[in-house]
Image 1: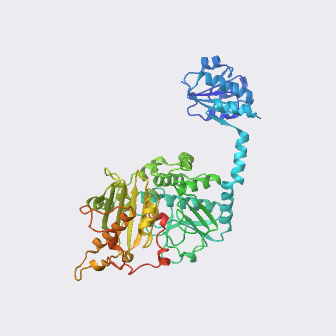
Image 2: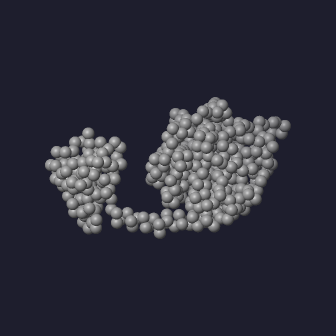
Image 3: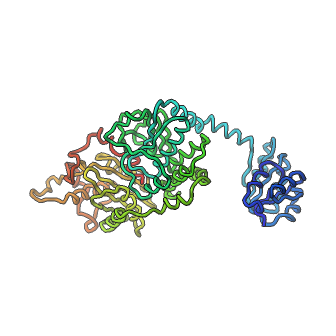
Length: 521
């Protein structure tokens, strides 16, 4: 049974016919005898017939899913398209305009075909790509990388997620293609089981930087991926001179670098790096392609969250290079005991306010487990927003998720916590990092002398109240602690461990987690 029909004798049709797999699914109809013989020698089914004759087409071709019109003369291509459309009105039709088509030829073919191939327009588009905005970015990035004298550190945000990891590895590959020595670097840990599986199964070589060392003693250039400011959600010295920034998060402050590419209209930084690989005609390895595709899928939640046309295009570009078996193993890793415990504690300790779930899991060591708990609780019936948090001796980490609301969680968390820590993210995925020393509660006139308070109760009161106030929700008795928005106004030190005492200065706050990527898991 024929699935693809090629009408004409052009080179495009021949290439499509000979590259089809299996070739038995292709039939070529042409009046050029030499082309018929050549195609048959290559194993392609070809017959002599008038491709402008609808009866001849009908007599030789059976079921057809797609049709390719490929002749040299524009007028004849138009006649073939008319005949093909008459016989197969529902088939996908791809038409080559031919040599020197008139505007009328182009218009006629566009009316008959689902897609036309116009070589003249393609050349113009290619030139515009090279001299226009995308072309400028390519040239500028190439120039900046070429100007770095020494070794480049491609730095991800702390505790990097798949998008940051894959983007860093891809940019390192581009840098090395320019002759530059480079490392993909990060601070913190890679603890989420999917992230560990990604690094281990794809054998990514990453450098875990020591915050006690000054990286400027080792590296001569710095690039930031998936975040945009040194010292903000990474542990670089804030005054580090940055050469390259590539990120898809909207910046919360001035971004300074020799080359800056900030595009918040795409769903993942991996999408941007895929474009650079393609622009520099660098064919990705299976490992890099698999990592980039996984990064896009995670950040867009399998193309359902803040996804753009560019994300789909990037995915289509990567798919031919992806190792599907490894991708499947990355997507289905074993879950750690701590992650299961974190999710269990979040479920047990949940407090519901209207369609919002808040849960403090208590002391924690695996920050990535918070994001998984927030995702899991979002599946509870009737819930649209989740806010899950836990603490270490020095820091409170929070992860929030939303579904099916007009809410911008990134803005909500910034409203609630930006004055005492770092917070932000996307409309439906956000997070916060709050120094423990900034989150104590002073009850003022309501404080009872000599009565001890459980620090975790104080913590819940401070954090829950701020979050609910930012949502414009008043806590109700029976659903959570009976406190109102005004009871946490004064801030002092909270003795949860060895945390920093007192408030952070504005300068110190700026060195915390990146507001726009505080939680990007």
